[in-house]
Image (cartoon, rainbow, N blue to C red; front, top):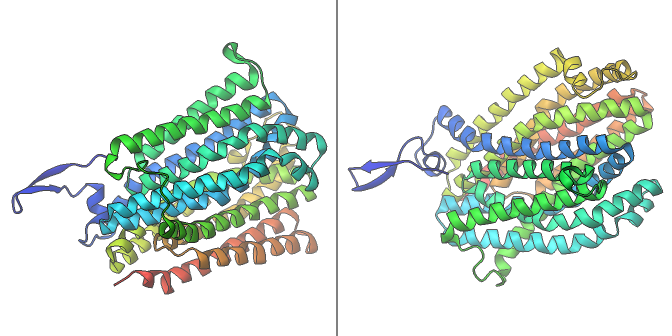
Length: 477
């Protein structure tokens, strides 16, 4: 991240200009609401772009494999969900790097920055080693979960190749968190865009056999996934070592650090479990929609894609909230943290209102972008999907708020209680309510999505209460 400096005649040395991001985040001087908005946008917009680019990678895979064949698409959809569940659990250690590094940067403790990042990398590698057998022998596991034999076999073939990508994928997550915590969010965006480009090009070559490459189909998609992750890892690691040599991330990398290892583990494991429990709520809702019928499942897939795209905005703001809360935590600046929390929450609410307007005012236009105009089932899918988008408009507010609350709580290194809140809200309330309203009350798809709203709403309320009643007071004085 570029910083601009001007002479400070009072002290005889340089000082950061007011628009320097580090001034906005690290300075003890109080910021007004506009200052917080500016700082959050400088941090958050590249992170939002990075999340959208990551979303585009999955969308590219879906589109290209859909062109190749329905069987390949079904198998990779199944395999992708399986891989993503393990990745989400392991990503908690990478996410834990962000608040720890942000707090260390706020306190001016460079050694702590190195220690937290290294142990985040260590835990990412160890988790990948433990996850690899589950990826290598995915076929019998999927068969045991009741999947069709042909689909499970294709998914297993895919994961025996793509599974190796969990090593670079989790390492990329940890290093990106390290860079984002140091407010180098633009490079995070550019590296994600590079990954999206590499993924599209290699997919196009290897799935279909273009440009003289062999036609490998589903295996080509798996190879493309691993290549994309390796290129991303090389880019992010080279940047970190070249631009931030003072942190010496790889020097004596083999040396254990039990105290920091324990801190990253205690913070990261609950984060991973929280991520997994929220994602499983949507996975369970997809299964229930499948029970209702093909049309309902298709409408659900489109509505979830649209809601997922808008959620990337809140996720970027949540990451920015974690970084700024971590800075304030490291500086022991409770007032700065409270003001920033109010501003980022209001920004999330404004973005939710924009998404709600789109879902309610132009639902047919949004849904039609995902469908062939000649599809005879289009009118039925639209009929169901418009109702689901109305429900999606309801949970925009609460989904954004719970994401922001999680980001703030992670910034003050509070992850265990939020995990328990998430498991209760998503699994204890959301999934049972989806089943009861969808099938017992026979509200069908609207009922299933009403359960999503209740689960996410409960999480939003409890997590916000947790931050304002407990999390804010974790800041040392």
